[in-house]
Structures are given as structure tokens and as C-alpha cells.
Length: 80
Image (cartoon, rainbow, N blue to C red; front, side, top):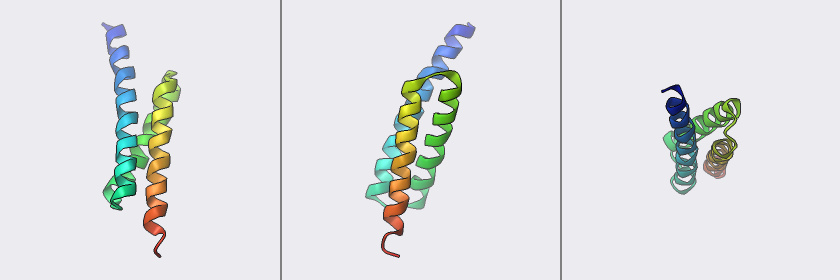
């Protein structure tokens, strides 16, 4: 039972990383604070937790989402 729970957590981490990438892309297209902050927070949380569990694929997705969120933030601050 414990092995199944750990496998589900690892699969969910990859899903959260992909979600942060999607939110990062949306944050670049439509400069809205909700998408930017969510992409950054979910991406960083996924990155750090997946590094702790050893899931390198989810860590890559998480850091990619966080970077896209930061690009969206900079894109939103560009007109200022």
C-alpha cells in the first residue's frame, strides 16, 4: 500500500510541474498576477519537493514553470 502511495505522489509531482509550465505560458500571454504567482509558487514547490524525493523529471518541469512565471512577471513589468 505504501509503495502505491509513493508512486502516486511521484506521478502527481510530474503533473504539478506540467501545470506550472502551462500556467507560466498563460502568464506570458495574458499578464495577470494570479497566473504569474501561481506558476512561480507551484513551480518552485514542485522543484524543491521533487528534488527531495529524487524525481528529476518533475524537478525539470517545476523549474521550467517557475522560470516561465518569472518571464511573465518581467514581461508584465516591461512597460513600467
